[in-house]
Image 1 (cartoon, rainbow, N blue to C red):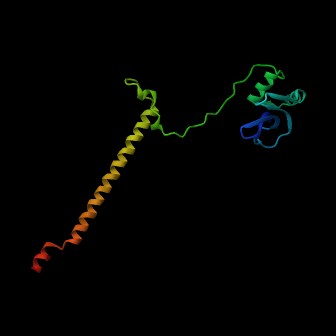
Image 2 (cartoon, rainbow, N blue to C red):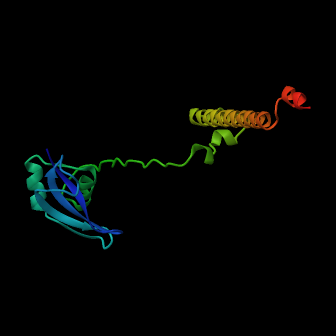
Image 3 (cartoon, rainbow, N blue to C red):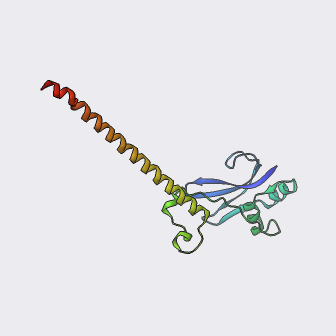
Length: 161
């Protein structure tokens, strides 16, 4: 299936876009069949080939949501604008650093995420306690072994006298 879509060009922080016709499986910055115009968002400059765009749409090419909205705004296509679906970037911040509103307000129900975060924190604290207990026990055993090695047995000491 053919798509009419924008492809990003230009330098870092100085982007401009080409309106191209490409196979929908080809990469965004990859191969395309024909350039149909350009859009520079910094200077608000636009140059679109309306006759070629209509020709490709007549051949069955579909527009991406952003390209469709651009063509409707310029008057090349008619119809309502489409809602653009943006992907949200996931933040990799720890859950403990940002208290939720439910934790801040007493008497309110807590969200499942805050309950899960609290449970994770408690289990990590328990694991740390167990580790410290084990290390303390190991230290005590090592000290007792050293004492027994340094001191001769009581019976052997009495025989020598």
